Image (tube, rainbow, N blue to C red; front, side, top):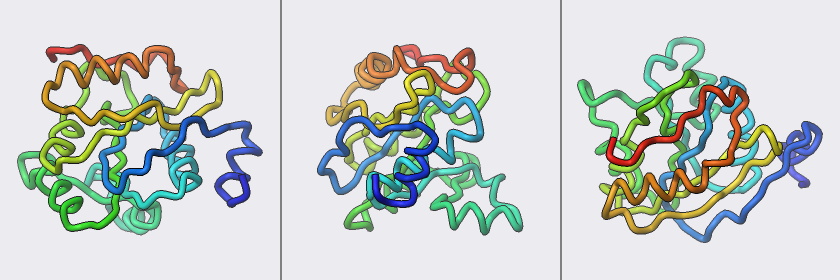
Length: 184
């Protein structure tokens, strides 16, 4: 690791595992997300992988002066379905880009969540891009790509693949990470 982000990760004892696929556009799900520090490590890891990305963040985080930090961080604000449908917003953003990866935490919160937000799935489906499954494993101090899901025809099948890759991954607060049930 020769970049600044790589040096910081190396000093902190983290290593990147798995190769980032040769894909121009995707939805990257990043889990587990059980502590605020996950965003910092995730930013370092994604930067080290050298990809063009944007993080999705709740619009509530974009108040002055925090909005300046969030934009510098590579984050874009999304609204819920009530005000502006994020699925269409992200699909349009991906469709209008030559190369872009959207990073999202499917849990949506750092607290224990039993039902993940399905938005990541519908964003990938609408934009016709694969889902890259990435992880942040505190027990091994590893982060990286677990796999890629190209076939998005069946939500339950996608969730089962994701659960297989995340089943042995431990978050900073492992008791707060719950795999999504198929059929939910």
